[in-house]
Amino acid sequence: MKRISILLISMLACAVALAQFRPADGFQVQAYVVRGSEIFNTWNRADGPPIETVMDGRRGEELYVMILFKGAQRDASGIARVKFDMALVKPSGQRVGPFEMTAGEGAMPDEVQQNWYLSNTRPGLRSLLTEAGEYTVVLTIKDQIGSENKPFEIKFPIAQ
Image (tube, rainbow, N blue to C red; front, side, top):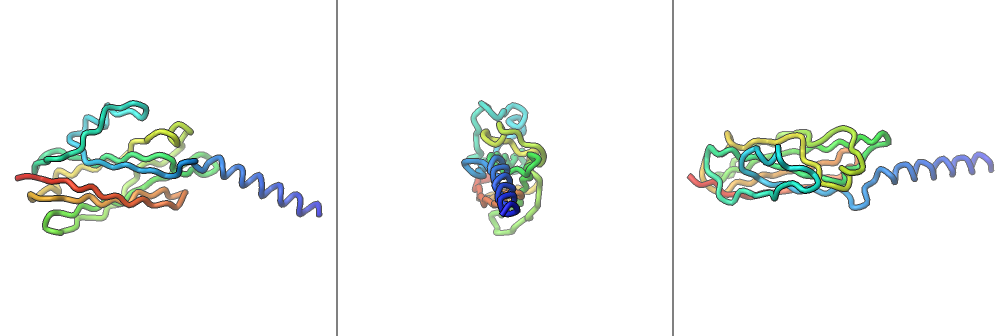
């Protein structure tokens, strides 16, 4: 009986410890195609500038994929691991990728769990925009500890 009580207390303690690392709202993502890299230098988690998405891109223009996430599950030491796969579908239907990249890996304090976190990786699209028409960025953003995947697609036009 004593062993069963100790086992139950140990299991309860583990469950409480795991619960403190599980975000209440779950894993959430946002992704955008943005013009230029300046937003990455000026955006901050609490009250960054508005994100202006590309509505009329041009070939040769510097365009980037901006990924934000929050609520990634952390392990017992507070480490979160978020990766993403990205592919680009050209107007001709040709698919480039997927490429696996790291969005964020390391200690994630509670504020990161509740606020949007800007991805460490900022994929540029300039060299891939070789034809006019509608492009699609296909993303799968993965919380590796929480075993949760979020698919995401962004469509944007490129003019001559």
